[in-house]
Image (cartoon, rainbow, N blue to C red; front, side):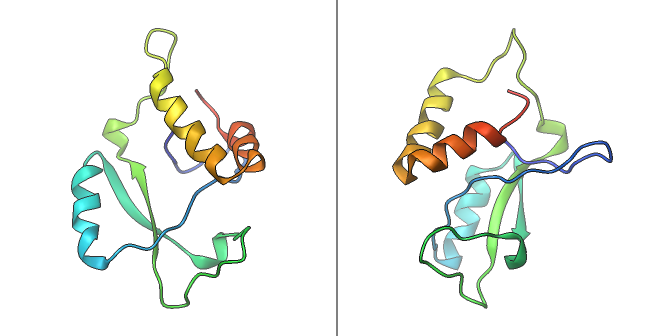
Length: 110
């Protein structure tokens, strides 16, 4: 359920995420695993923390977005796999019901 830039006719929405620390030496392993995605940084001012945790001032927050050539939207013939959806929902529910509901309310084109 990838991120993408808005076109000029679209309005933005929030997106849920979970932040976790990794050692900088592991970034290359993530890049290899996410080979069909591009790693981009998210400015701190665009992040709303809903827990008691804080983002360290000198930290970099990364996410992965699909490369344009790999971006494919679900269709009736090729829907999102139920197994993938289940994994995502389990992860959301591990955070909270509110987190899962926001995910459902702000995820489009699936």
